[in-house]
Amino acid sequence: MVKDGYKFVLAPLCAGIAAAAIGWHVTAAMLLVVCAGIAFFFRDPERLPPADLGVVVSPADGRIMEVTDETLQGRPGRRISIFLSIWDVHVNRSPMAGCLGKVEYRPGRFYNAMRSRASVDNEQNIIHLQTERGEMVFKQIAGAIARRVVCWKAPGDKVKLGERIGLIRFGSRMDVWLPQDAEILARPGQHVAGGVSVLARWQ
Image (cartoon, one colour):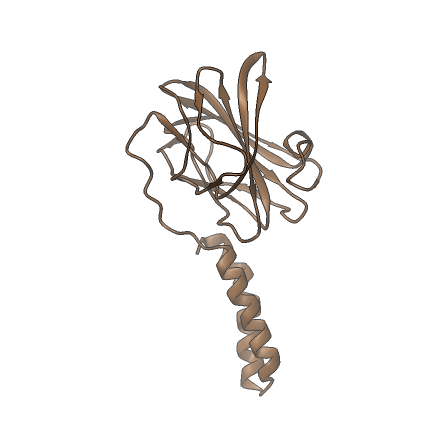
């Protein structure tokens, strides 16, 4: 479990233990179930990324919602959008190896993360990654339930392919933008695993 989850687990765990101690067994059981659910949400399984450094891996677990053409600051490219349900692992990973450029927090709305406008209007962290092949951009986007996007990295940090970079709490979305010369392999409806599933090749 990621360290961010301990403060959420601690309260129902202590309350459950206290309830059990005074004989409130049903209440204790309910609190411990809540505790287990929170621990499940904040789980952080180990992942082994591909050996090929020319691939772009998914930064999150979830389902591909959209693969669409999108121009970013005058550069033609494509955007891949991934929806994370509350059942998915919410630890986010770097889609490629490189050095973080600008990490921009942008406050915003909390529209349903499955809506296309969430990519622009919702609260998000916009992360620019400088790779050997050029710059790519990925976003941690809050949803209707997720109310907090957390990035553990700072501009200038070097990251490996599939390295943990942050967390989105309780249901959300991640976008990956790649320039036009990247070969997109992801398809809408596909289920992906963060740090493992290949979204594109960028040779």
